[in-house]
Amino acid sequence: MKQIEILTKQHSDIEKIIREIEGLKNDSIKENATQIAMKINQLAGILKIHLNSEDKYMYPNLIENTNHKISQTASLFVEEMGNLNSIFEDYKVKYNTMSKIISDMESFKENTKNVMAALLGRLKKEEKELYILL
Image (cartoon, rainbow, N blue to C red; front, side, top):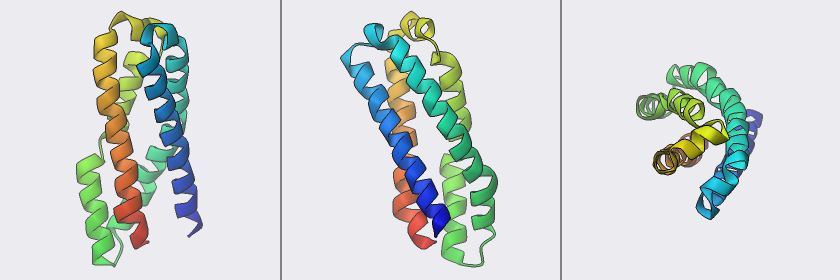
């Protein structure tokens, strides 16, 4: 299915940016804060398209699917991960500039770890448990 190929490619792009953010963060937050902020904004652009299309179109359609396994899996994923778009939006607003990152580096580290893990978890779950059903 062509749509799954597009979503999987977007997952790859998202994962690449997350790894870049993590690498910059682990190297030196203070020295890399400008690059990190740019990567967060880049990630936000991709996620806005990706998560919105999944949350507004893909998941509602899958929940209505006549295949019970697809419908049930989609419903469970919405319940578990449906608020990830707003969680990332809050994260982005909090850390989308160098000064915001530097002003509270400890919170930035912890929030980044949690938000990026949630994003990567969603991507992997979709690929391993949902996309294979389609």
